[in-house]
Amino acid sequence: MGFPSWLCLCLHLFIILGICVASPLGDQKRDRITELPGQPKNVGFAQYSGYVTVNKESGRALFYWLTEASTNRGPKSRPLLLWLNGGPGCSSIAYGASEEIGPFRIRPDGTSLYSNPYAWNKLANILFLDSPAGVGFSYTNKTSDLFTMGDRRTAEDAYAFLVNWFERFPQYRHREFYIAGESYAGHFVPQLAQIIYQKSKGIKNPVINFKGFMVGNAVTDDYHDYIGTFEYWWTHGLISDSTYRMLRKACTSGSSLHPTVQCMEALRVAVLEQGNIDPYSIYTRPCNNTAPLRHGLRGRYPWMSRAYDPCTERFADLYFNRPEVQKALHANTTGMNYSWKSCSDIVGNYWADSPLSMLPIYRELIQAGLRIWVFSGDTDAVVPVTATRYSIDALTLPTIVNWYPWNDNGKVGGWSQVYKGLTLVTVTGAGHEVPLHKPRQAFILLRSFLENKSMPS
Ligand SMILES: *[C@@H]1O[C@H](CO)[C@@H](O)[C@H](O)[C@H]1NC(C)=O
Ligand SMILES: *[C@@H]1O[C@H](CO)[C@@H](O)[C@H](O)[C@H]1NC(C)=O
Ligand SMILES: *[C@@H]1O[C@H](CO)[C@@H](O)[C@H](O)[C@H]1NC(C)=O
Ligand SMILES: *[C@@H]1O[C@H](CO)[C@@H](O)[C@H](O)[C@H]1NC(C)=O
Ligand SMILES: *[C@@H]1O[C@H](CO)[C@@H](O)[C@H](O)[C@H]1NC(C)=O
Image 1 (cartoon, rainbow, N blue to C red):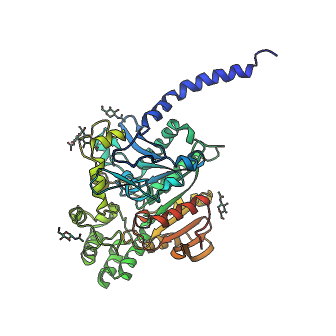
Image 2 (cartoon, rainbow, N blue to C red):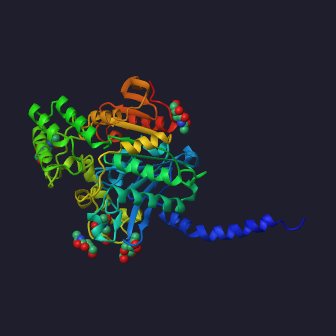
Image 3 (cartoon, protein in one colour):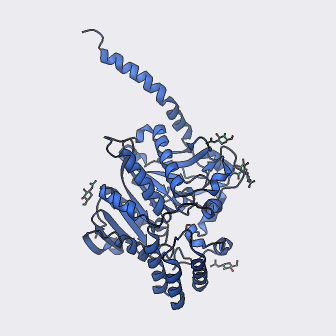
């Protein structure tokens, strides 16, 4: 036998492949974070961040930050989880990464970081994405884009991001992949999930090995969300009987993102009656310093457009506006002419399309057999547990395990119900951002979700 022809073929393939992947791998290497200013020493995991172009014509690029699982926890065998925040218009770096599930929290001085003991990268490789363009460090070179963002373009750009990101990170191709998010990401997550599902349907061993998603305090179905929200306000003694009646009459048939004038008026009265509470966490004190933001009714109801706005947000403002932090993150490479903000008012205020209901997508994806979990912190008044229960109930799914208390260290951590195709979990005492208020319980939630096990009873 002479020189085997398969070896020759392999060599050829090797050279061709080598040329094809040389550039993406180079990009990956360039995105590696050496160290963030003020970060703890010897963190024991790798981080990458940078831009992925999602639209060449307009010059839209999305910013990501990957925090891999700790090297002693076998990052190569761990799944990949994409985390999205809502708004619309709020940054996943500002919220998800910096005050919820990320490995670091920012100290009040805005210059140093400390470790989060319940960071989700102990269980999975976590990918944070600022979405859509115009949010956080993600940008567009076409200013008019900012005034025309909406659900559809957000999902399309996020899908384009993923396709390009998997080119740059070939080691994650075919890896178990999940998406999670909260609040208005109750739209982004199922919408992106639907695109991934439809594009990879029928493909054997798809690059994006999508297994399922999880959403928390998620905007799901405007009609049922409204009914449940107003009921929560009334049953928690936050509004008067007359305002409760007025809200039900003026709002329930409309869109939560684009309410009618009558509905806005009813909401204005409700906000006045509620007073200076933190609607995202009704039993904790509100932050003094964000008062102007919170109460500056920017022409429309502020709650739905904003994520949680505690004082910690100011720490992120200080930290991410520092030039040396932006340099270490490979962020703002084009020198944007505005400063970094946790939520973009322009993107949020000019939001275009926002479908009334995600339930049709749920029906399709439940049918597809994806793993779907819905969780809810039960002290949130913005997208309350009652809103989520009415929305899920509208799916009329058969019950597998009826409502039961789940256990956290001998105490009730919340309640859960397992439906055919969907698991509902509440976290008691948690506000809108469950991992911020109840980090350990949120960690148990992620572990159960990834292991496909119901919450411990
Ligand atoms: C946006 O414009 C800047 C400056 O011209 C350029 O360097 C950058 O590559 C553009 N971004 C995209 C995504 O095209
Ligand atoms: C809020 O701010 C005022 C004055 O700035 C201060 O006196 C008060 O103690 C602060 N309240 C809380 C709860 O931090
Ligand atoms: C930033 O630059 C864009 C494009 O040149 C321009 O349209 C916009 O008005 C500028 N914004 C600010 C805040 O200066
Ligand atoms: C980007 O960098 C410029 C300085 O080059 C700075 O003025 C601006 O605030 C930064 N913007 C963002 C969004 O990081
Ligand atoms: C997850 O668990 C459910 C119920 O126990 C089971 O029907 C399903 O097949 C499991 N899925 C996977 C991917 O293991």
